[in-house]
Amino acid sequence: MTIKDFDIWYLSRYKHTTSAYAAIAFIISDFIAIMLSFGTGFFIVNAYDLSLINFKSFITYWPFVPAFILLFYATNLYPGVSLAPAEELRRFAVGSIIGHGGILLFMGIDNGKITPEMVAFFISWVLSVFLLLVCRSITRNIISKTKLWGIPAVIYGCGNSGKLVADRLLDNPSVGYIPVLFLDDNEETGETYRNIPIIHDTSLGPYLVEKYNIKMAIVAMPGADRHRLADILDESVSAFKYNVLIPDFFGLTNIWMSVRDFDGVLGLATSQQLLMPWNRIKKRLLDLFLVIVGGILLMPLFLIIAFLIKISSPGPVLYKHTRIGRNGKPFKAYKFRSMVLDADLRLKELLEKDPEARKEWEQTYKLKNDPRITPIGKFLRKTSFDEFPQLLNILKNEMSLVGPRPIVYDEIPKYGKSFKRVFSVKPGLTGMWQVSGRSDTDYTERVAFDTFYIQSWSIWLDIWILYKTIGVVLRGKGAY
Picture: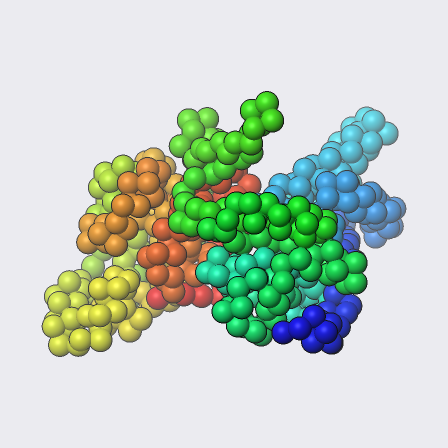
């Protein structure tokens, strides 16, 4: 494609694309979320005693909402495009704590005692981060389907690396970067890839910035001559406001990297966050707190499920099965029983008679149409409620709320050399690959998700995965 053809193509599609629209949409979304958290807090307190708070009280405090927007702006939550989910969660939490803390401190100094309004704002603080995430998710899903969303990005290199980057961005538009052009000197790369134009001239960076104000460049040219790459970076890529260099180590996803300066010499420091002792302690404390609180709140649901299992088919309520835990150590994982008692015999007979079922079982160790599952079991599996008893495994320190999926012995070969790395941590009730695809994800992707999780673990990443799990379970996506 010539630059003249690209001019026509680009202006017909991305003339109005700017991060400003996303910023405006997210400001409105965050405003609504904070108002909802305020209103819910006041509603709950008022429902307890109608004489405590009236509507006038709520109107009195709503002007505090713009202060939250300013706090979020100060923590760089706008425009919000391409912000990592766990980091977005952390910034919301910090902003919400400061905002609600300031209000409560002001009210405490003003009144000198605990008031119903203070209780309402405490409830608002508890709810606010969740509501902010929900409202942002809804807003992001809506505007990511429009041409007003995202930051146009130019990809240098149309080899395997460049195509992989483009695939990820096109398949996940909520990331916020729109690949609009490949620049590659190799004419054998063709004219387009997935409808993205390819121009065989890597010197066009300054022109694209000046004419279209494109701000992002992604350099994906592993294997390129270092001197040629240096020229491209200096003469073309440097014109962009933001740029990302995809390093020349495909497959090295298990190592977390950060930049280090050794007296002017660039170095990459590597570590695996979840293997650090203090991080494991923090993760364990989070697990215990959430499991104890969640277990108490969900106890009525557990009793109802146990009753339904007992009356629907003969056999015990709980089912114990051997799974592989941290460092390859086996343990007994608990589940609500969702299968008939002679499940193993039925599976053996099915696999002997049905080649398609046997192939599916060998690939994923699951069957979409499993004859062993009871009627109540189908519901439990669709909702993932059958896994609730694994909270006991978490209390016993055999599992964590978030981590790699616990597997059976026969699955170990599927992980190859990655097994030792992936299972250097405790398996989890949910995890990165579950919220990204659950049972629909193959083993290669599972390993990639799990190793990324180990390398970049944080408290905020765990909380974000738990939040995403709620949506996945409600949709029943990939569960069977």
